[in-house]
Structures are given as structure tokens and as C-alpha cells.
Length: 120
Image (cartoon, rainbow, N blue to C red):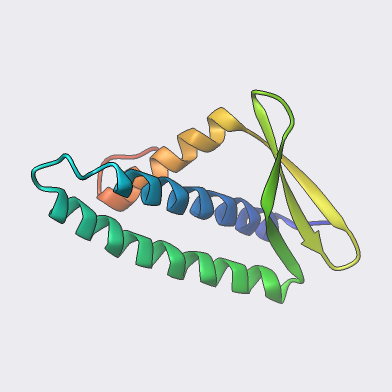
């Protein structure tokens, strides 16, 4: 059984991983901007912070004997499953793709210093 604190860390690890992938993908598409150097510098700095945060979350999960696996399974067009290895057994966590996208958008807004919804 996964307790509430560990559940929050699992969710955080998934969101941080998706945010990293999103920023890395977006960085590739900035070549046409006139001020691309500034945006790329910001993205590089935030990627460093995100990797550090993800490393800390993974370390915390490791202390509880848990690990979020990188592979996912599309359940259908609306839901995706993530796998969490725990001591003794594995868990499957199902998430709405729309909810994950919204949470990643809020994470990026927060890191940009923009107004964001803390409840998401």
C-alpha cells in the first residue's frame, strides 16, 4: 500500500519528468525567435533545476523502496498508466492525459513566475 506522502511524491516525479520532456522539446523549436538565446538560457537554467528536483524526489522515493518507471502504457486516447515499483509488488497508476497536460502547464507557469492554479 502506498501512503499519502509517497503518493504525492510519485505524482510529483511524473509531473517533473513530463515537464522536463516538454521543455526539452520546446527548446528545439525556438530557433526562429529573435531573442532565442534568452529563452534558451532560461530553459537551460530551469532544466537544471527540474533535474535537481526530480533527483531529490527520486531519492525520497528510493528511501521508501519505490521507483517510478519511465515506460508508460496508453490505456486509451484519454488515459495513460505509469508503473511504480515497490518492495514486494508493482503498482499501476492511471492518469488522465488532459489532467497531466494541465498540471505540466501549471508547473511551467509556476517556474516562469506567472500566475498559476495551486490546486491543480
